[in-house]
Image (cartoon, rainbow, N blue to C red; front, side):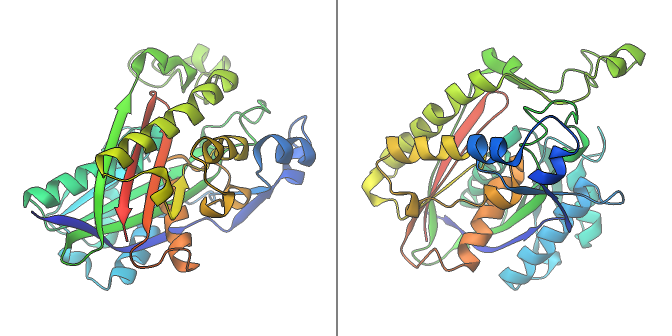
Length: 326
């Protein structure tokens, strides 16, 4: 049976750093309030001339370099984002062009913060089926463009960035063991951008009512997040014939430090076994996990043979987990 391995990763974050003290000048908040409730100290915002495709293309270039392959070897580009350059064409096609990839399949995937895991699952399935050999999966976001600077409960949470991974058929012990995905559309209203689509097309009223900014029911979102990520991890481990005790490193979506601590507690994992970088980048949605994965690899937090578990939760509601034997 064919198996899938990660052969290269890369990340890119914009140069512009926005600290909590910068936000104190923009909205009624404090550094202490933000750090205590979220664990976030700073985040990155894209430059005026940077779009989601620019961030994604740079992360992808670094992943290709890390994999030591040429862009011509890519058979498919899967790009996860909730903040595309435009409604269409797909941002994946724009990245494909920037990378000089010819005649590869390319499409966008929108599962919010769970998007990268959904992309990994699709890539894994294509590779195991033998349809494609080498697939580039990207998570890239510019949430600074859709956060409401007047909403202190959401504008402090999010940042911009991109991460990417190159997947190929594996020939050794390193492989993806299991992907588990789920969703619950009945709670779609908890986290959304109300206007700009076919339901509420852009007009003067939607702009005046600030409906093109992200809206979140923070209390209810928090209530679901930890429980569903733990559920996803538990199910994915069981399908892999493993348990929580086998986890060497958990890389969760970087949303809120309180959520991560709750997940760690419910899985009986010490925080040393949890990858945390939200203090530097905030919540980068679909880019969150690939950024954290690349940093974990580069920082030597993952050794050969380790069981690495990725888990996310996002708008939709969507959630999932991926188990990898490194």
